[in-house]
Image 1 (cartoon, rainbow, N blue to C red):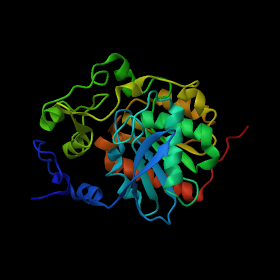
Image 2 (tube, rainbow, N blue to C red):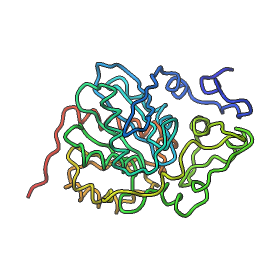
Image 3 (cartoon, one colour):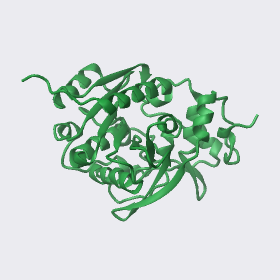
Length: 310
């Protein structure tokens, strides 16, 4: 039987595993593809939902891309217009000579502006994308309705940067003869269990592109060099908008790191744990993550943070 995930696969790419109806419906949801130029670099983003609704920008992790959110974004469109971008050096966006987080934060804000959201948008960033959202919230918090930081361990380097510095996966991406061979080498960093093979199949096929001699990954290996005057943990104290923290039960934000982030944010940021989830929680526990995010956003619609007593 034909499925949405099986359409437009490159020749030689494995057929997708069976997927549940909610996933098939999500990736079948219509969206726009748009480009916006930021500091001389073309930034590609995807856009779902009703233009009359307030906005959310979803920010992927290192070496990932906008389609990591393609099955999440449609679950939010009842109440929001949702964008997901390819940061420069990722996906179908252009490349730069250097990738300071301040440039990525500017790209996130440029996408929000280009999408013409109603009111100030909310940012949601996973892993390295959470570090980018912290930077954006520190620099542009007066233009944001909030930032949701998803399993971003700010007291240590993001896991993709660690792999880029010391591992083999990201430093010198190989060219494979066929897309099927490339798919056979696709893996999550950091490594973790994930029983949702249909999700891994979907994001893998959007992670590769055809080049001279075969197929390789879309990301630029130079993204893992770190540029910028301030760390994500330092930036937390400069954030000027509402913040919420998501941590995976078996993720990288340990209870101790979550507590330190909570303290750094003035004890006003909710910390939400997704049970049974690992670092890539939108892949292994997507419905639990969606439920938690929906609940948080609905609460933010009618509540205001209360400062702790002096």
